[in-house]
Length: 144
Image 1 (spheres, rainbow, N blue to C red):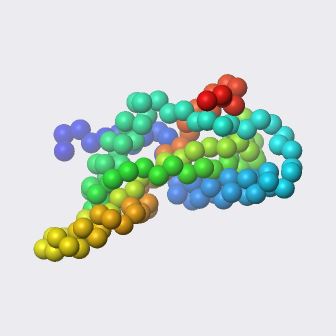
Image 2 (image 1 turned 90 degrees about the horizontal axis):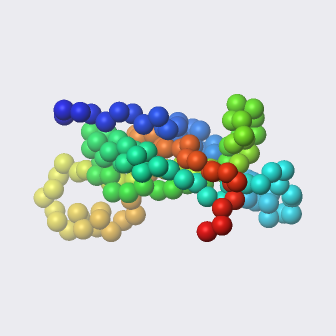
């Protein structure tokens, strides 16, 4: 491989991604009980084309190296922890990306089993890092 892709700067750990998603689910449940939010939450997240293209290149290349047919990206909602290290994003909604795909089987003798694999929903690829840190913009609530 001539030019292996650079590791994108927006990668986060799988543990942090899980925490963001748990926080999001907890916050949404709390919002349904009538609690008033302390600050206006984001309702849109933006990623540059360059960041997305870099991430796609990264997951395709490294996914293939890990033995996966990378076929998509799943988008998860999360909420940043309410602590100072996350600055103005603390407590706000985020969106993180996780590559999906299927493990490439060495045995390609059966066409029928291949068809069954293609019909199943792609799984998250746990060996690759999720991507986060899109821009929520100012103000955080955009009108679509």
